[in-house]
Image (cartoon, rainbow, N blue to C red):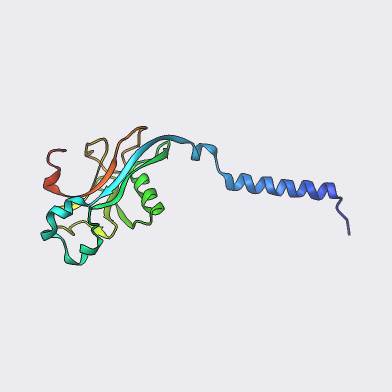
Length: 165
């Protein structure tokens, strides 16, 4: 049986550590910050339409309608409004459900914090806005830009967005 010298054992240990760190570390480009923006999630419009709200959902509506207050986050190159929503919900323990919409070739937000489309009437659902505007394409199509203000997800009734569309 061959015995290893202390020097060869140290070299083997160093090489194994280097291999592990390289394999687990990923590319620095993956974690490089491209900018920052603010994000918030609100269902405050439900408060003005409580007569339309599914009674079983009343306990999920915060008193002030704020699910996530305006929060500043950094993002990486190529991240979308949908990526940001997934991350902020996961990091804050907020449930979120989505599906892929072939019609719009984008993600569709079905529900956030146990509040789903149609929970406040047949025209209600989640919409997103960026810099005060509701883009006319899905949230997984909007690539974040440095300084975007209030990437907001709001539970709205369709007629409440007329001034933005």
